[in-house]
Structure formats: structure tokens, C-alpha cells
Image (cartoon, rainbow, N blue to C red; front, side):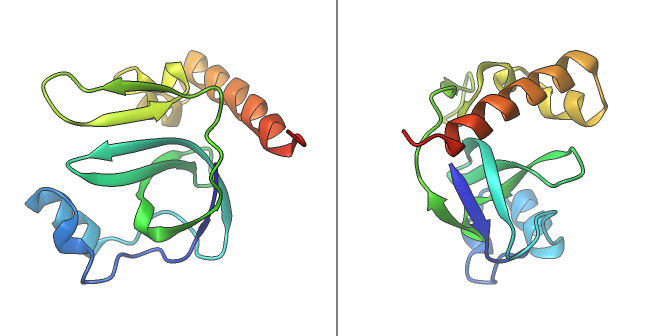
Length: 135
């Protein structure tokens, strides 16, 4: 999946629809780490508290969850490397490469944990080839 960022901040009309009060407060006060006009390879999709998020690389080797409302889908093909998991005891859904489903995986990657870095680089390479193929 490829998506173009159309904004780094949710409009006031979208914030009330973004899950819990804490999540709404964060989203209304803080711009996202994504850059308007930039196209992103989407590493995964999450449905958390009935809000859709995409997992993208901010360009600083930091994978972040950003609200889907900040993006326009350019290529809606779903990666063949994605799998689906449900968070136990909730309705939260995560669709991404298998290692990304592990608890704290995104934080491990941001902290430079070698195994997480290696797995992100591996799946980045696989998915980039996938999107650049003619299939």
C-alpha cells in the first residue's frame, strides 16, 4: 500500500471521532510526525478504538502510527507479507508483517534493538520490491 500525506493534523471535525478522550486530546494538540505532500510505503494498518491508523516510516527510521484520515491512498494493494491479528480482550485489529505484531515492536525498532531493525529492513526491502514489480 502506498499513501500520500495530505495533512499533518486532523481537522476539528475529525478529532471527536478518534477513540478515547486521551487519544482525542493528543491528536488535537500535536501534529503528526508525517509530512504533507510526501508519499509513504505503508508497513501496516491498525484499527484501534474504532480509528484506522497506518504504520509509516517518518524518514528518521522511526515507524509511527498516523491516523488514516491524514492520507490519500495512491495504491491500495495489500502486501502479500501482511498477516492479521486481534488484540486479546478488545476489538483492536492489526494488519502488518508478522514481526510487527509483537508487543512493543515499534518501540524496539525506535530504540535500535538489532533484531527489530533487521526485521524492518527485511520487510522494507520485500515490500519495496513488491510495489516496484509489474504484477
